[in-house]
Picture 1 (cartoon, rainbow, N blue to C red):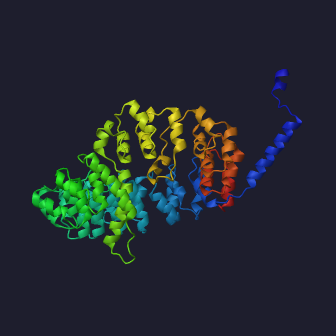
Picture 2 (picture 1 turned 90 degrees about the vertical axis):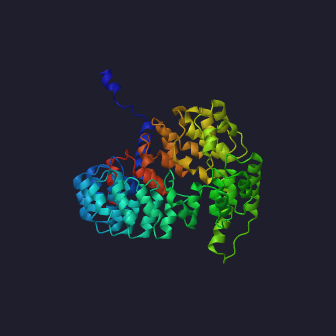
Picture 3 (picture 1 turned 60 degrees about the vertical axis):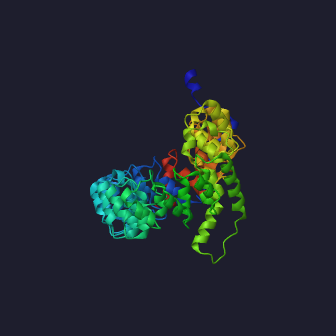
Length: 517
């Protein structure tokens, strides 16, 4: 009897009050109306715990982008239903679904909407050849252009685009396929359209490594204004060629000359004071540039960039472009990545130039004392690069310091850090972060899978959107807190709450009813 009685709940006035308050809170949370119902439904559409009958009900939702069609768990019957609905948003999302069975991809390749057909190219790596053969002759130029850009397209099919009737597609092929077979590259390098030749012999390609032009075509490429800059690095610098390139009116040609490995010292010194600052930057980055010259270039680029007058309203395109390049030159000095420095980093860890220290920090061969120095560098780009290169050498105190000092608004070239979870923290640190004054650190707390419910609830009421969004899908978040997040004023938080797999089915049902589904 005693053991039976011990299992009964003990009631007290306090517990009755608490239970009544809990029920009242539940009713309040249930009664909340989502401010961003569309975003909540987008989250629900991708909720991994959404039951199949509710998934089907979302096929009738028309106020989003058809996110439900991207679900990885769609059955063939569900896919057939989506096809029968024939809604653009659903079909476009379905075409983007990397789990779509081949027979449905082939059907969509014949769909009347070009945007739907073009979306199929995104996952071309796993696509059936029959689908790609349909799309390679698609009447919509967008479809063929996406195929030209796709490095996962079988080479024999992709090569056909070198003869495409649209020069924009041939140019896209040249830009995105630098390692095309030589026969294809020859066709593009000698294309009658200037923009195709320019893309085929460029200083910029969408992918590395950059190609080397066939030697027999090099004289013609150097003679052609639209391909000259891209051919400079492959030129033999005899006296006549050097003189012509150094006097070329196109600053891009002179900038490429400044990078040439066989550039004689006299030409290097002349280019170090070139009127175009982007040319000076290229001399700055050379391994054989004397340090005193490098320092002079660094100072002159900053000084001249500040003193450059804005172009007149009626200035021609060339003048505006030159002005922009001069304005950007100081930033270019900062963001240079120098492989020769990375290959031999130790002499550069105390360089006065940020780009040199960043390049050194990209090396995986630095000793521990050099790593520690760069992890504490005054420049954020250096610290973050070193932490990304050697996260296993970052101790807890340093990791916390790096995250506390992170300022994405100060340097737009460090935004990538906010999208990656580079540094890890133990649960003890993550729980401490839950009450930290710094919002960034509070948003890390939900990385602890065993975060106590009371801390999760506190984070769900945080004044910062990023903190509430981070805790929304946590398994230990109390239900009432999760329900309140569905009505959050931030659409990103509301969407994250809708996507939480810990949202009970009855509340999913309630949301679908609110949406009229």
